Length: 127
Image (cartoon, rainbow, N blue to C red; front, side):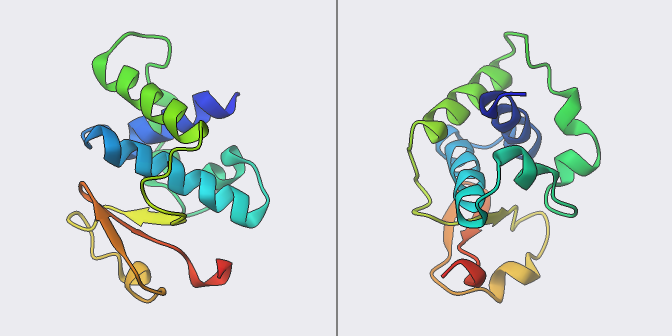
């Protein structure tokens, strides 16, 4: 699986209804975490407890080879993030703060950033 496909699938699964820039932010944060840990994008995605969309198999349900608008936008966001666009400024993690309380995220080093419906942080371990 290519980085583009893995990132597209997880963006679709985690941020399908998000604004485009929010999707780019999700992709960039995953890339930032992969770089901080010196592992692949797919290894970040497959890390236990990391992504709900991977744990519940939504990742694999993404209609990757279709022309559905949400998938096209997820692929655009993944492409932009892989090209170096980083609207979350090196943040490494995100959560849907309106969906759950993101308790772990609030214990990390500020500044925190909200983009769309996600809260982004850079984990202390990477500073």
